[in-house]
Length: 269
Image 1 (cartoon, rainbow, N blue to C red):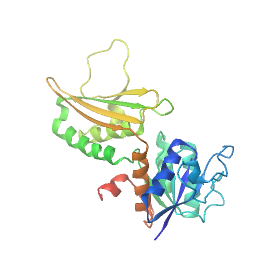
Image 2 (cartoon, rainbow, N blue to C red):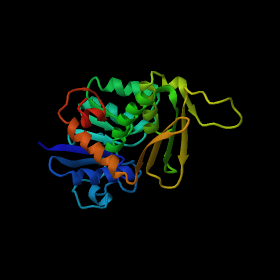
Image 3 (cartoon, one colour):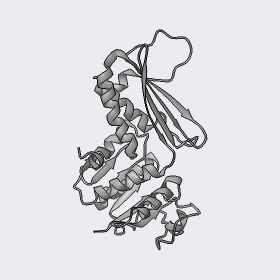
Image 4 (cartoon, rainbow, N blue to C red):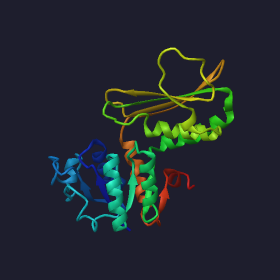
């Protein structure tokens, strides 16, 4: 059975990569719709040419309205506001959605949870297979090392990324905190400056770098007295995220309403 894919933000770097990833996925998936901003020069362009691959015979639209019969699953890596609007559209028309946007507030996350009551929603801060494997390793490391180490999370992204720390870094912190029986909101320290007291061993520190065209680097440091362990993931291409999101979209087709995570796809949990 063919799963028809719509791509939100088709003119952006990630949107173009998603289009390419769907085409390269092969049998079973097809790009049948894509949207760009209403004033974008890409409006009306063939999505395949927009992505720099081949003519697909599908042109970029300025909104989802009118496209409800042209796709089964929407993949959305746009902005918080756009993703929430697209979620409501999918909810209204019974379409599945894969959300890769980050930076949502707690209230906005509750909107996503509410939407999953009616439709299948895949929501994850990172769709890379490697990152999600790292999350499993982080849980294991935190449980083994316990309270004997200091924990710091360092992440780096391109200059255009708006939210910080990244959604992936926060998810890494949540996994580590949960394994140690801590609440991340109570122990997180976001940056340090000036004179301070000795480091509280229960805290989890975050350091953020925004520079150039860095796709995404994340390192979690478990530092004890005499040794340290570092678990690092470095992405060199957006394609790694796109492939994971497309894999998630294929998996999501035919599922019932609910909030799903990439763990469901990769590990069957």
